[in-house]
Image (tube, rainbow, N blue to C red; front, side, top):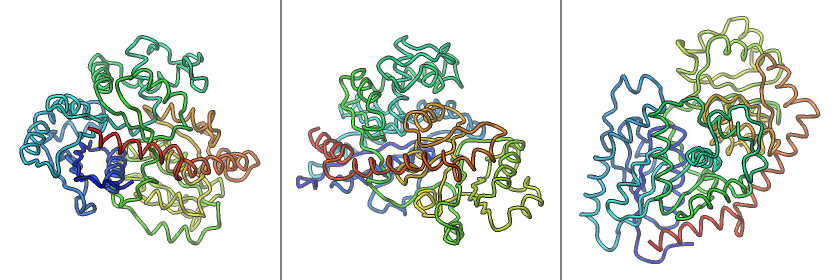
Length: 445
């Protein structure tokens, strides 16, 4: 659907996190392909490269983040500071854009990363529609909302009871989304996030309706004033240049080209998760003993208090030889698309899960925090396209996924799930239709 009317400008507000920047840029690309003009406002901390997206207008705003704040790696602390520090600069930015507006290119709405929830109050101030984007599953919205309303408690951590009206999830999975931080300040932060959803005109979730049908239905009931759009997976609707904050080592693709089909297990724990030296060595020898070819991402900072790769013993390197390829960062979408890859050992971040199911790659799951604990339930118990890894069972788990009969069955289900994704993206499919409806909704503002 092309926009035949005068151009409409959509202002995006990004957060500075790798797992959020790419989905937001992908969504911006989707709307740009439908004829909307795009302005991207972003904090100066870890900003995207404008030269990769010449079709967009980029505007940096002050975030006033100190080195000491950033160096803590405390996600909630950084998010709290961003919401406090960026509101005034963002309000000033919107005011300037509105003054420069003309009727040929007026601002239609503000689309903001859900972590930057202060943007909704700025949108309200200027009487502009606010659109909240969730780069995690719809069920995470449910977790925060049900907790705020008193339906679930942080004491439900071990509860096997089902979530009301969602047979596929238990209370402990929703509670796991919130369990790492339970201070009063964090609870206030989550309440502010939920409040922004209540006030938003639209909530966009990077998911597919068939993946989370029950959760999406309840989210819509809980936020009746907002229109819910499940327009994922963004990366398939808008293939775009990666905006990785880390340099991708594309030499690993040449290595993959020399491997047999479906033989390689790809190992990556995303851009935030960290492990200790003991777990690194457990992983190394598990990979070595499995006898499977592997592509392993050990990014700088992944191993606490170490560069990571320097800890691998020479005996490990001699043992695996050319069977293993280790890089600091990989072009993940290209890796998962490669015919040599037969499994993905993942931290279960939502972007990684979507990229994996879109290519029909079964998963070995090692969650760390937040929604990753919920995502494992989806992967292993609901969709049944992966296995959850137990410490000390690495070699056995890899061979079960890559070689054994159980792994073959998981692979078949992963292939079937990929086919359902493909159908949702075609004309008449749920994601295709949701995208058309979203464009119409923005045009109606």
